[in-house]
View 1 (cartoon, rainbow, N blue to C red):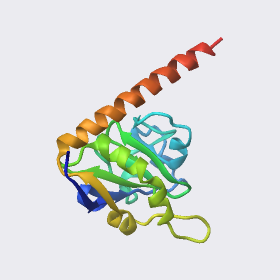
View 2: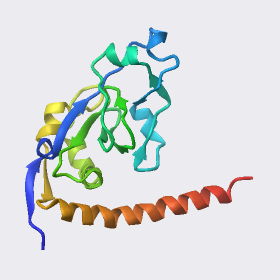
View 3: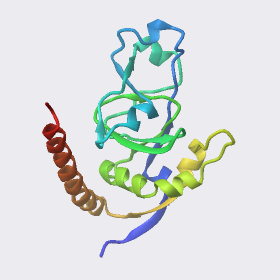
View 4: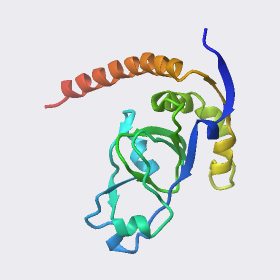
Length: 182
């Protein structure tokens, strides 16, 4: 049996927030090629890996605000409006301020981290604060305690099993969607 340890999310990777370039400046969006994800993009998203959102931003847009390019395999976690949409970056991308994403460190399997955050969604959501709507701060996200296998190979075995189930579900959804195409 694998050894499990309690640790903070910050021990599993780097927590990064996003930002929004000014929407009043067309040059930050028009003909943009940088994938930019918002919680709205995940509201109807059904998979685990996301490539792009509804809008892209330009290099100027990227440089105009505090958003930053997140590497492939970063786990995106919406931190407000609502808390708990989750996806894995299939490629380099950035997010708006509605996220506290986690760039997994070398000892953390990205798919395991995805399932871990999904499993702990209600716990994380309960730690949100705010009057208009609940939000998770970067500091809160970093300090959330979770249990993980110490050995990355065990994390990978767990994510392989859960991933196989999700692969089947996604495959069945594609089949079902094709049945209703006229």
